[in-house]
Amino acid sequence: MPATGSTEVTAVPTRDLARLTLLGALVGLPAGVVAFAFVGAVHVLQDLLWTELPEALGADGPPWYLVLGLPLVGALLVAAARRLPGDGGHSPVAGLSMDPLPPVAAGGVALAALASLGFGAVLGPEAPLMALGGIVGVWVTRWTGVTGPARGLLGASGASGAMSTLFGGPLVAGILLLEAGAGALAAATLLPPLAAAAVAYVLVTGFGDWAGVPMAGLAVPDLPEYDRVRPGSLLLALVVGVVAAVVITGARRLARAVQATEPRVGRVPLLLGGGLGVGLLALAAGGLGADPRDVLFSGQASIPALVAEESVGVVLVLVVAKGLAYAVTMGAGFRGGPIFPAIFLGVGLASVAVAVLDASPTLAVAVGAAAGMAATSRLLLSAVLFAALLVGRAGLDTAPAAVLAAAAALLTVRLLDPPPRTA
Image 1 (cartoon, rainbow, N blue to C red):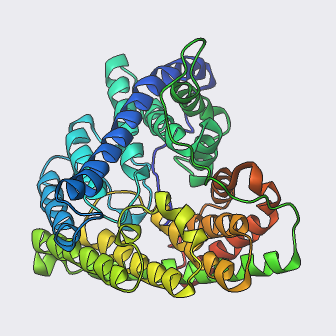
Image 2: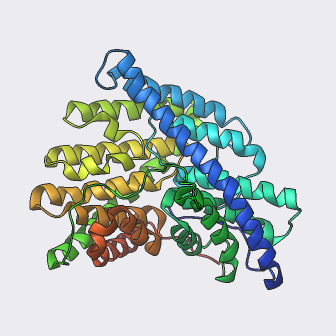
Image 3: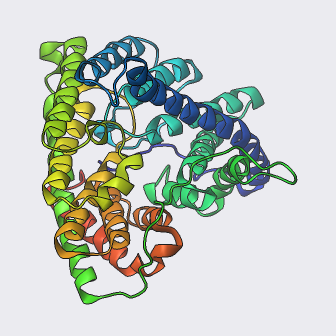
């Protein structure tokens, strides 16, 4: 499920880069605002539907009829959103896409993503954020009259600004764009996207006396310090990398098989069946001792509880249910990003070693996140850097193991699902 992009930007003359860098910085601010508004709306909707509504019904957690019913409602909303221009955004089965969408697609992208992420679909916010940020960039190109290859560069700048707010800074966004090959970005043409990412991230850091917009950090809280690399840690990283690649490749193949049934069964029935399947998987996991809410959603918020789980059975239940729900969600036609659920699966596989072998939970987060992201995005450096952000200062010494896990996952997924040959 590699990141894809076809924006040609390498032909931008050097003399135009200064102007484009200023325009990139201009794109960064509205792209960052759009990203904050979208992420905030997702959090509010999830809290309203899955916390406040059950409390109003007198339940301690979501009752079974909400676990089944809310994904079905989300499926109907996604079906409606995909009738709007833009088909609700890019399909997560194809991975992260850098291809820009026209401004007229903004409403459909936002509605489809909110209906997916807010109502329990097993996807993350990264793909719609990139799409909405790219739409901001495309809108600026029309407003400024920019034409030619520079249009794609400003579209990438908008996506970079949105990614910066989610992935923890302009460095991650820049590396992801460079490694994903968004139009074969040359080093010099990274300037506008980096300027956009930097300006967008100022919304997080604040400026002068302004403290910035509150934003939850990516680092997993309360991880113990991992201060020494051990041979067993490197072996664990290799095993997790290979197994994560096998699991995620299997999920992708299942998603493609589900997606292939759409012409026969129809879009709305497939979405409804997918929503019902996700709800049933969550209920089944709950019946086996897991929290149904850990099966739903992207999985980012569930990582602390996952690595702290002492029951191997519960961890395996979550990995199986989450993997199946992930595949069904993607294949049925919901909209969102594929990265965060894959990271959850990688961390879940590594958490088996925490429960069985008393391995470090910090190590499990690092190698699991690196393996999961590398397997689904086929990006090595971005996966390692993102894993480092998740473990923070407590996991500085996990870097060698994270690199091995990401490399093992990347090599395995390329063997199992080779990239198409170019002529």
